[in-house]
Image (cartoon, rainbow, N blue to C red):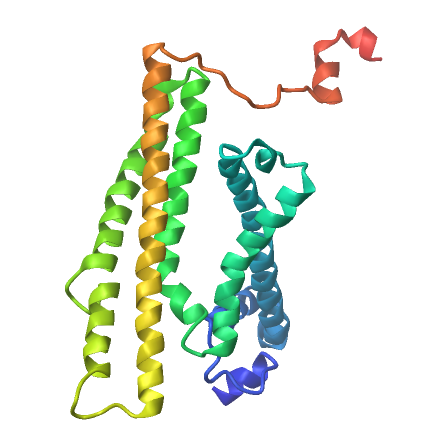
Length: 275
């Protein structure tokens, strides 16, 4: 480990939390065997670290913007001005709500080593697959509205599989009686330890147990909210598909019209006109 740390330009690779250093070491190992050898291990390592940082920043940027748009659209049904994406009070208020939502986990991780990434990490797999479900819903909607329903199986089949697997996994993560699987059952196990008369937990252990119980309950609540919202998305998408396929709703696509490039336009002209 000391030689590996020296090769990538780090003082140590022990106790490096978050997964980024381990991922970067793996990428550096692969890339150095392809180009540059051991001499470029440090360069590839820091390239991977930079790549991960930029990836996280761009995800936060895009996610915050999309979340703000969705929140504005939802609040616009309550009060019309809140739905205007050009109205600065609405922009500032909804941006603060979205940024504050993920910023809470960052602040939690700074103040408590058991918070932050430790509370978010168990949600990563479920959230990732729920996002894929939304993507397949959007793709299926576009295919059907383009009057290409015969090709919709390419997105409907993986959509059905993801819904079945991810919703089942979410159910078990929330309500499984096995404390090694379910958030709530694990929290209940920790609560019994916290309230046990013998042996009485120390003050440090009691604080740790209280934080872990809060993390489990928070994960269960966030998972339930995400699954509920995605279930609404799937149900509404299926309703819209049925309306379009049955002819009760016009298949209107709100995509920008195709504009041929100058090269495409020139290919349609006679050769003499191009010359």
